[in-house]
Length: 465
Ligand SMILES: [Zn+2]
Image (tube, rainbow, N blue to C red; front, top):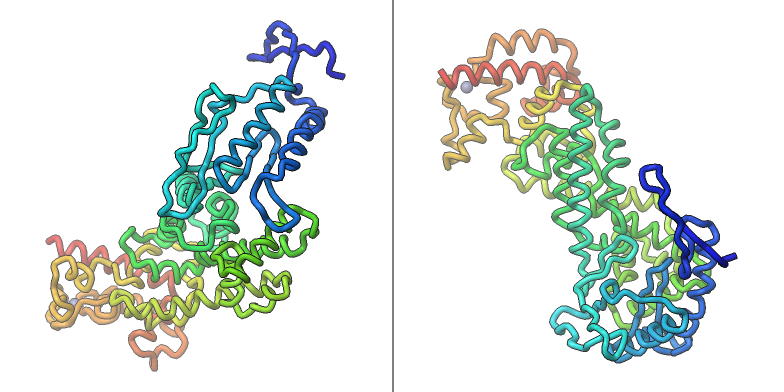
């Protein structure tokens, strides 16, 4: 089938002259992968039968990973690697393959303090020295020499940042949409990018990826980058990056335990689990075990059982809810929020298609960053007790409650607002001040947003007079 083959190239719908191809597989031909597999099979056999490689157990040494034309040689030391390289060189000479030394590189995987090898790897005795580099990209994941994954995650964070930019641009052109639409967009455009391979590397937090998700939440709530994270993340009610990655890790666990015992991946997985169980290595299985312990499903780890993903997701979420409840009490800016928001979860006002400016004012009000004295006084290093309202003569601190419910300067707006809300708020006569604010957010967010806009703009004209 491969006698007298010739090819030509299609450039701008014009064909070049035909030329004879004496080597290699035809590009785009469905038989090529099979032809290539037949050819490469000998090499893989030869490498494997050398007995050189990474020892997984008494019966298994892994010396080579092959994905299409990408070949990875694995050994436990430099001399062994040179031996495998020599096997590849001899094989390629026999079959008249030319290996490009520029595209063949070495990575020395090791623990941090150890220095990189100075061994000189060569294809031929007199050939060029192969470069020893600091990372290798395998199926889209950068495996750096210390296996830190920071390179992978920073590449994903910039890709995620670009995806978010284009998502926000699209969003701006549309009329305002509710939280569920925005969430759907986020999960179809952003997380497939940012979470790529997270089952492998998502065992800890990565700041640059968290920044992407926080930016998405800030854009939707309409707050600036210095807004307290605990505030807007709690109101959005999105599970954190780390939470999603935990679930992805458990999905991979489920696939691995279901895998046939003869598969190489399964054998390596079992080896990894033994390494953790016997030598307490902090490897993949150690991470899974930690996640399963946290969500009280340790037995599944011991029994090598698949876990219920929905249940696990709920458990991870519950963990984040209690973490949030702790965190929210620690920020002085969030003292109002801590009183009006009972728990982590999507707020009603964010589910409504409110005017963007009104929504932003509502958010700023909640997170203590609306630029009234209680907040601007911070910039001037005023003590809390000195951040008094400069508009009225009540001598009260101008905090959110004073601004929205008490300052007599805004009485005319307030009585109109109260008239509109009259009878629309359940039990309003017995509510405390914070109870009123909480009821306004839950029951009258649209009116409250409009009211805040009127009073805030009026306040601006008074301040700049
Ligand atoms: Zn006042």
